[in-house]
Image (cartoon, rainbow, N blue to C red):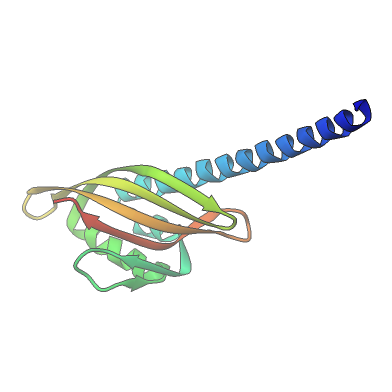
Amino acid sequence: MKRILIPCAMLLMIVMSCKSDLNSSEEQDIREIKAMSQARADAFNAGDAAAIATYFTTDAVLMAPNTPKKIGPEAVEAYYQEIFDNYRTGLESGYDAVRVDGDLAFGRGFAKVTLFSKTTGDTTYATSKYLNILERQPDGSWKTTHDIWNANE
């Protein structure tokens, strides 16, 4: 009996250590994805369209409400630059959930946007929910492949 218990116990320890490494890896991916999302929000608050665009893949799709889809970082940059040309911006956002499956992930989140018109001085507030699909890049970083949101109002 003792001959069977020792190998079984060793096998169980190996399995448990592999599982914790997998969870640790997934937790690290989630931390990196959340950090990337925060960097995008910081760029939005700084009015930096070029910085936002760096977090999108070459074939990324941006699906903003009431506008045609934008494909690629250049189109993403142009979309945000038009906003920054007309408004000073404020954004509070974050993920409510992030799931990772290999080299793909999704993040579901919330956003609170404040736009201060540079011409009229008017202030607009909006809240929304969004979904990002992300892909791990060859260098290990995460970039957005699809970004879609709609208003809560």
